[in-house]
Amino acid sequence: MGMITRTIKRCTCHSRTASRFHAFSTAFPVRSRLSDTASTRKYSQNVKNASCNAGNHRPKKSSKPSHALRIGYRSPTLNDLALAKRFFDESQTYHAGSLSPANVPFDTTIPQVAFAGRTNAGKSALLKALIPTMETIRPSKKPGFTRKVYFYGVGNRPGRELVMSDLPGYGYGSTTEQGCLILEYLRSAANLKMVYILLDSRVLEMPSDKQVVELLSTYGIAWQLVSTKFDRARVGNPQPLLDLLMRFSKASRKGAMGASDRYYKDEVIVTSSKTMAGIDELKWSIMRNCGLVSE
Ligand SMILES: Nc1nc2c(ncn2[C@@H]2O[C@H](COP(=O)(O)OP(=O)(O)OP(=O)(O)O)[C@@H](O)[C@H]2O)c(=O)[nH]1
Ligand SMILES: [Mg+2]
Image 1 (cartoon, rainbow, N blue to C red):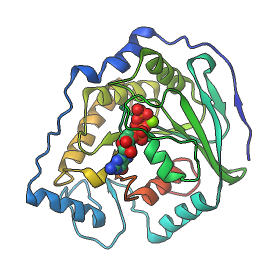
Image 2 (image 1 turned 90 degrees about the horizontal axis):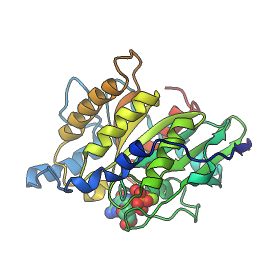
Image 3 (image 1 turned 180 degrees about the vertical axis):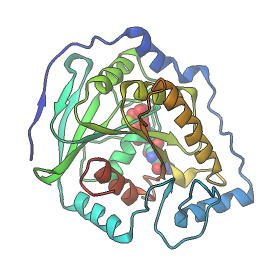
Image 4 (image 1 turned 180 degrees about the horizontal axis):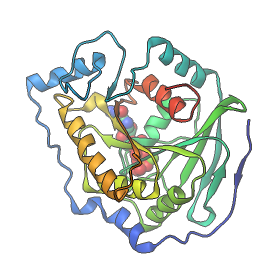
């Protein structure tokens, strides 16, 4: 297992930007913009078998076990998913430390991915679904429950390991201090290969998420959307997710200020920590983003 080093430094991030983080959602009422009609409920079945293509946004039936709506990426095969599951099942998992405002940045030579999102989006629950043996991961219905950045390592030998970080949420119930911590972590994280932005399927987008996308692109950090709590979704078809991806891609380009680099993946992974839908798919995506499997 590779060594993870942590250097101690005080949080010096700009408090105005940080307060934007926690002020985001209180200003906007949480309301599903999706209707719950009989036809829309079919999506739940469709998405279980569907992989959706950019040129054809309608879900199509397929025997592929995909929970991702993707554009331009190959679906994982059953073998890929089995490989990803085996890697997570057979690896050692360990609590690799935590960050509070007093001790950023966190430095590691191991590839890492982060789970970001509004408070209550389901970040900790998703981490728990990925590595159920980690008893220290604590989901909670109380918004703002995760107050530090927590790191979890998964791996079995040098070169075959990765770190996942559970970030505090932004928006309702969060604090300026947490916003500051998130910013400082993102700004300084070594080897950060992907930030998964989690969106509750029932709420989908809030302005704060778009601002995060812009911010990540400003920092030159890759991001990807994960829709959570799919077991409770009232989404009738994948179109809203694809529209959202389109809008976020635009925000990303704005954040990147016209830079030609693309900082996002045209892919939304649909998950439920309760039914475990999409979890193997997410495992494979994490491995792929950390360079442990080929694209
Ligand atoms: N039904 C269902 N509930 C979920 C799912 N994922 C999370 N939840 C519930 O949603 C609530 C919030 O989950 P957390 O994982 O703690 O959310 P978080 O994003 O870590 O929240 P903060 O730490 O406050 O930022 C908890 O009550 C979870 O049990 C899911 O896939 N399905
Ligand atoms: Mg949490």
